[in-house]
Length: 268
Ligand code: LIP
Image (cartoon, rainbow, N blue to C red; front, top):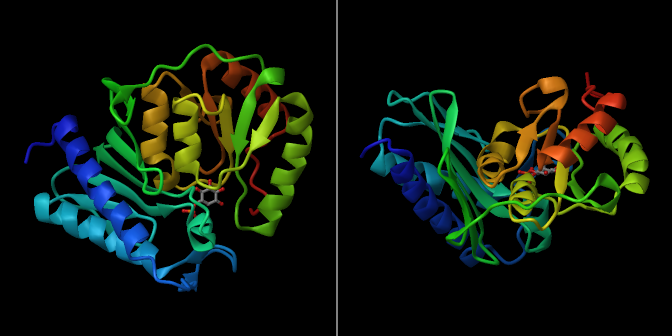
């Protein structure tokens, strides 16, 4: 199977839809926490593990030489040059509580470059997809962002980590940001926040503490829709900070967050 970005996207969409059906149709009644990771609130359910296993199995069946980087531990180098960056359930706490704001996020990286990505909300059945240099789509409709409002009229999404020290710092930042913007939204899944930027459901987004699988596919969708996705002080978007939106609004957000040293790591 060729590594053409479109072919990789088609496989990603099929696989993400299948994992989406699995986590909705086979969600056990009385779903429980299977284990925890960085803190007692950073949880994993059996469905996170089953979803990731299904994604790895389906992609390996189609492309046996590819590598993986998955939230639940899939970590294989591969020999084809293609690596799949996978979040089997982004928004796991929402999933546990039955809040319909979680997603399956799958991105294909060729070398160091993300070339295709898909984010599926299996409850709303919405599918955001993107191919590097070719655009972004929501359910097949091309996404192209309009000019954003000024900061004081902007709807901003953000999120909070699982470590109390980081949450304390994020609350301090929010105390400064909140009076300066229209309002804030906390959906609970970075991939959906970035897709919300891409389709204009929010004007901007920022969050500290994201992992590669949280932002791989959603970041590509946002960029291909015309957003900037960046870190502070010209850094790449990553754990230190992710800021996304149209350039003028991102410039205002960067000025604010850089002035607050928002990328300083409170965990050390
Ligand atoms: C979640 C992120 C979200 C963040 C949560 C959590 P998970 O990922 O998507 O943006 O605020 O703390 O990290 O753990 O549900 O895959």
